[in-house]
Length: 62
Image (cartoon, rainbow, N blue to C red; front, side, top):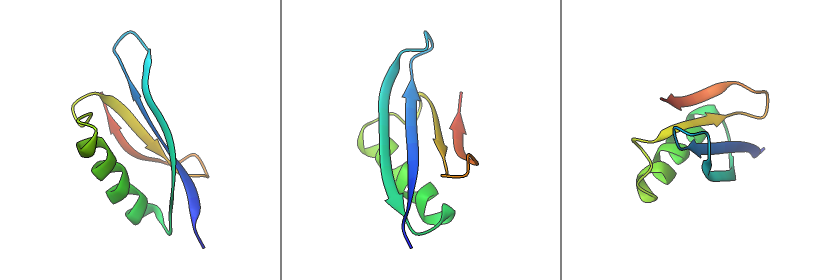
């Protein structure tokens, strides 16, 4: 069953650059999809986080 995950990218000022939801089958797939989205949008070096529906932090970069 697919679950909805949230990927958010921030400027140092706190401004959101990306606030996107996506679906994945599990946390591992969500982590991979989140990393791919970051690379695709060239945000991998920006402050970002990816959270699961239960609030678990799957990806974080500051």
